[in-house]
Image (cartoon, rainbow, N blue to C red; front, side, top):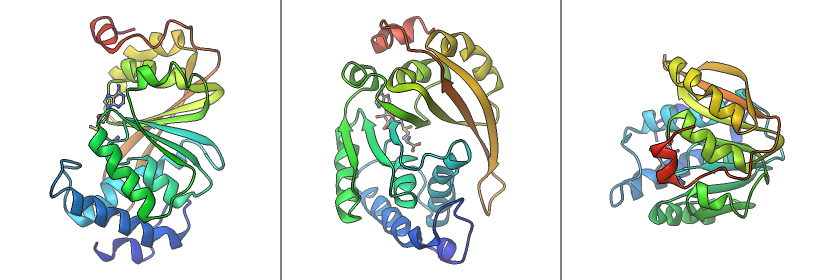
Length: 231
Ligand code: SAM
């Protein structure tokens, strides 16, 4: 890793002491990426900004201290793993439908002695059958458009909890199109937060969706159905 995390760069509400573990995670990611497709971003400084610091920005959408959080479609661990490293009191579930990625996440958790992390191989729409409305928060980045993503994530969130969708700033239309789905699933968009990733000019957006009422039992549907007839 370059010196970027070690030079006092703002870690957005996270203790500077977590920089070392973030760097170890980044090093594991880049090493494993040589034998497995985990990320298209391979420049260490870009891993630091576009993966690590971008993930940490989730805190600007909600303070998740001590909360149970599920990262839906976490891939190589974004945003969940950096959040857990920076905020060890999170109770985290990392969910992904690709087993090899989940195996990598298990290695990361062991190497970094991360506790209270469940690494789960599964599909969100199936996982919801046994884990309905069990999480204080769901987070997700780069998994699906907001209509579909809401159907994957909102059923997992407790009433009163929050779903944080990480999006780009050009998501106005996507947000508008997802409004009926979000409402139907028991949610309401509370606010959007645009943030600049520290040390870059890259601006991303957090869509903060509050769960106001239970999700009707028929959701989530099977994935094929979601694709065919998005809410
Ligand atoms: N969130 C990570 C990130 O931002 O780097 C990974 C994004 S990657 C483009 C999308 C990930 O979502 C893949 O690892 C894929 O296996 C997973 N995925 C897609 N649909 C899913 C579903 N229905 N349930 C669980 N995981 C899913």
